[in-house]
Length: 127
Image (cartoon, rainbow, N blue to C red):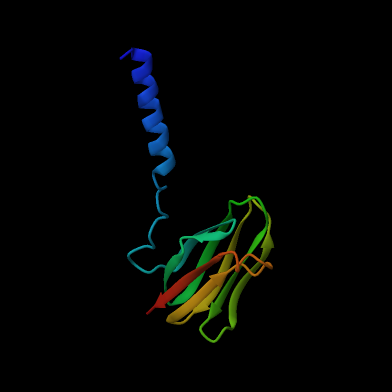
């Protein structure tokens, strides 16, 4: 078998492997709860999808790395909004502060269609 043929086979195998290799998963939430969380917003996801915070005044730093504007809403189990960042453009970073009690919360983008497309995360607040 010629060298050119061998190189062609190797390149084909590498291309197939690259296409079928899953991308790295987003980083898991921190092992310890924090009062300061960083969230990345992009079409149509927040990363990480699972957030862990310590009860008290929590500061969210939200970076929009997408191509369109997004917002940031924190809602408690009673479906009451407890924090919000109005729509902010691509490339912008905003900070949102919220005094949170222990419990389960939902974080989502309220721009029409974004939450429905999957732009939502869970937030667990512990004592």
